[in-house]
Every structure is written in C-alpha cells, then in structure tokens.
Image (cartoon, rainbow, N blue to C red; front, side, top):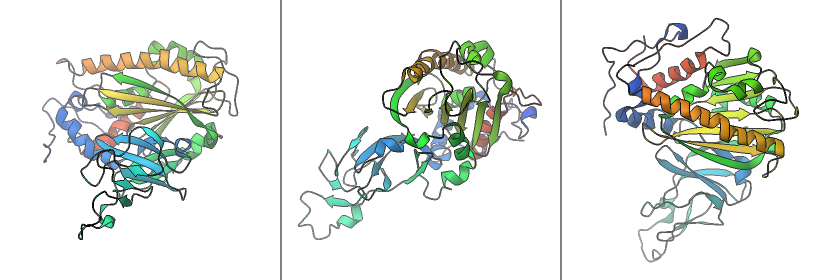
Length: 380
C-alpha cells in the first residue's frame, strides 16, 4: 500500500531545528489516521522496542511475547543460554505460537501442533513424513534482533538496525550510576493504563516539568526543582535531580539508598521512559504503546530486589499508580481534546537560557527525532 504524502498545510508554521525559534508540530500529527499508519513503518518497525527484564527469561525455555505496534514477536532463552527473538507466527498457516509469558520445553503451535525448538528450527510437522518435497529446514521461524541493555531486553524488526548500545551512547553508564544493582533486580509489578490520547502527547508530557509545579504538588515536594535538569543526547534524554528535597515528603517516605538523589528519569526513542526513585534499589519502565491514533496503552513495569516490594517501594508504587499517573493521564486526555479544536494548530516551545526545569527543550528534541524519521514537510 502506498501511503499518502504528508503536505504542509497553508496555516502551518515551520518546525525549526533551533528550539527557541520553533513551533510545535501541527495538531493533525496527533490525530490523523494516515499519519498513524505511516508511523508503523517509519518509527516503530525500525526502532528498538522494550520487551522486559532479563530476570523474566532467566532459565531455558522462559519466554515473553510482545507486540511491536502491529507485529507479534517473542523472545525465548535457549538451552545454550542464548536469548533468541522471533516473529510469533507458525510457518504453517500463520497462527500465533505463544501468549503472554511462561516456560516451554518446546514451542508447539496450538492450531496444528507444528513444533519448534528454542532456536526456531521446525522439529515436527504432523502428517508430513511421506511428503517427498517437504523439507523442515525451509520452515524455521523468522528471527528478529534482540539486545540486552542494562539487563533490559529490546527487540528490533530492522535486521540492519544500529545496535542499541551504540545508539544510546552514555545512557547505560547514567542508569548504572543511579542504580548500581540493576542486574540484581527482578520483576515485581505491572500497572496498565488506558489513555484516550495519541502516544506522542504522553511522551511530550513526560519530557517537561514546566507543568510540574501547577499539576504535581507531591512530586515537587519530593524533588528539589532547583537541581532538576534535563539533558538531550542522541536518541535519549535525561531528567535528574541532584537531591531529594526531603525523605519525609507528601509523595512517599524513604531512607537514602546506595546513591543520594531525588529522581532520575530517561526517555529512550521512540516510546519508552525509565524511572528510578530515591531510596532502595528500583527501576521502572513506562512504555507508551499506540492503540490507534487517538488511544494509547501504557505499561509500567517495576523491578526491585525481590518480587515482593518492601513497604518503602510499595508506597512509591502506590504514589505512582494512584497519584502521579492519574494526574498525567487527565492532563494528556485534555490536551488530546484540545488538539481537535478548530481554535488550535501549533504552539511554541518555552525555552530559557539556563535550560532549567521549566524549559521544554527535551520536547523539541523528541519532536525533532520524529519529524526527521517521518520526513515531515514542516521543517525549515
């Protein structure tokens, strides 16, 4: 299918590579079905997609499934200890092979019982022994790229993709600075949110704290905003506070951990955010998954030293689930409504010279990455 060419509209203002001179991308990029269709191949089918933590597939036969936009895939630990990734589709008639997560000694299709080993090779196909032209070697599963980064598992549908570790530059060292024990963490909890907004609205919202003071009073009580800074680098950006305002704040109570800081967060292109809260070792990922142009599914996965979180981390999780996320969801859903208004098309990025917590330069950084891969005709 040939996708329509996106043309600049008469009332569009240019997106500038200089954030302090730039307008935001036009509202139609957050609601148009044709643009959403183009994002599949231009953005998601060529980018590294978060699947889970290495602890979730630690033993031979452990597997996890995921959907990279519209493509169903899975990763599985082989008997040799390798982590393999495949399209989640039987080579006989196209039925899905695995669901969710679990452990399997052999991969058996529930439709006609064709079976595959952990390396994707077809081991048995019922009633084919007497077919002279049938060759099992012609029906191996189709592989996808897999990479483990900071003990997190990513897949990429593009066989020629640059390795994530190479693309991400200093991100790994930054994450390990704030969570030195990341390799010891295990899965603890998943929270799911259904949001009536385009996925990019959620990313835009994460990338600035201009809204924090009016909208997140508890977060502002937790984090020292004077030391809160956002830095953009390549395909990621970081948001870190040098210290917590107080261990006794209105968000959650904690004792200083291995590293004394207030908050550390990162955005990794195209749709993953990574969070570390102060106190005991922890990391969480919040992934924005498009469910059409006007809806998004968010998965927030928590990883801690034990599957059962301590009281301190349970309080942090509860704050995130019951307070901070509902605040952000309400903001983003209101923005999505506004993006349908005949009274709005584009705004301006608010940028200050000190790139303080009030500056929106990281939102511009994300939108720049977006217009580049989409080849959007709005750049000056």
